Length: 87
Image 1: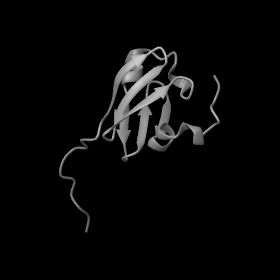
Image 2: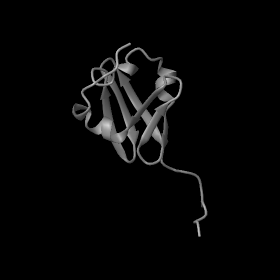
Image 3: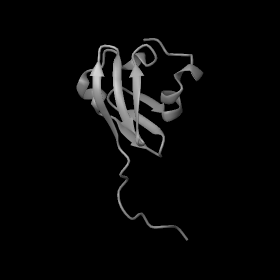
């Protein structure tokens, strides 16, 4: 037997603020700072594309217009993932 889906997913991701050094993301009840040095894919992104973030499966974030996918582990511990793709 499978449980019925009662309502829509209430977990959302929201970009709170953008600075010249990075941006603040609120997701899963926590605020995270994503610095452009650790997350260079966002450095030159238009603000509208940066704010368009989708959160699913409790840990997956996707920026569809930027073609960027991250999970919370990568955001919380960027030092564990030293390889960064270059443009």
